[in-house]
Length: 446
Ligand SMILES: NCCC[C@H](NC(=O)CCC(=O)O)C(=O)O
Image (cartoon, rainbow, N blue to C red; front, top):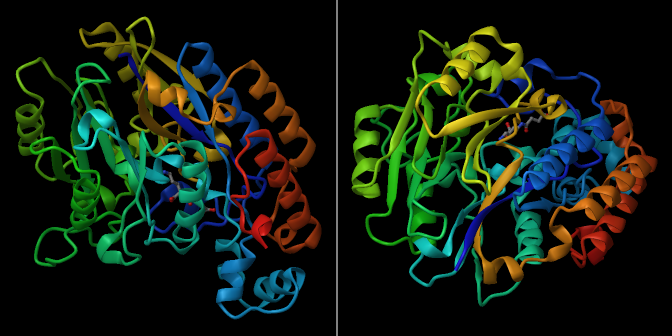
């Protein structure tokens, strides 16, 4: 049976804004309080999805979450009507209020960890929503993420959904941003690489000193157990703590893998040779390509600014392996010349396509952050909610929907208004009909 790797991108929500919420994420902090353009952000995301679909890729859409999140604010003691809650919170606790308004669920690489059925003991595709405990604005995502994933992958003959890990820093889990899979063909048994920032239960081991490690080894191991990964097929590697301290808040800011390729920066891992050995041993005899980018060609700051590694490494139906990169990689001299050199050298990567996802980039989210990879065989693909799969019609419908509901300018003060809340809810209500999701949002369940 044929298997493909689908990309499910997060549709940017109507509240997309720059609130500087992510300590350790340089772009988020440096764009704090900038005026955002949610309409442009959503349209940029849709363009990328459509382009991949036009390349013959299976492309899915994951709906955004309901924001402002009045329910979280109520849990924190703000009372009255929804309007009262928003006004009180924005005045009395503006930082908490903003955290409850983020459109951060757009970065679906952090929505969940997904293991294809070829890797799991029960031959089901396993999903564990990420608990995202390290940042409050993200820690309020996993329950609705789980609802949305169940609405897209509902058939329990094929799909197994787990509860997110315990909501505690010891089990900090950021999902697929710290997970990549290697295989020969997508339907073959693969090797899953889990990358962590620290050991939660042993504080004598190396850990970053300045910025937080958002993922723990113990969380990775728990996900591997839940997903019933077969013996020897999970590899665990520690991220270099020094690069976390320089703004590499997820492994997908410094490494990306696909099939038999790992494309990574020289400084990505704490112990590179062990990581390579472990992957090589688990992968077996077939050739594996470690494409290491040396610091003398691309410095760490250039890698973080351009998001060279937050690229999607995909196999087109023709079999060609190509990079989907943000425009920032074309604009950065060192990175662009490295990419030209890469294309001229003898690796499986044959081309680079550049996309404008600047609205997301300004919050530290590149092309790879915007997508969740899901390997599916023909039967599993047939069981996916087809209203979430990109095609000409869905593209046109979602463009019309964005143009109808989204603002092209949003500041923090707009977020507290009742008009904005009503606007967002009516947009999402219409979206659940377009995508036939049922009542996934709390405002639809009351
Ligand atoms: N995978 C990319 C995630 C980017 C995300 N940025 C943010 O949440 C910034 C939001 C703001 O600052 O408004 C994060 O750091 O988790």
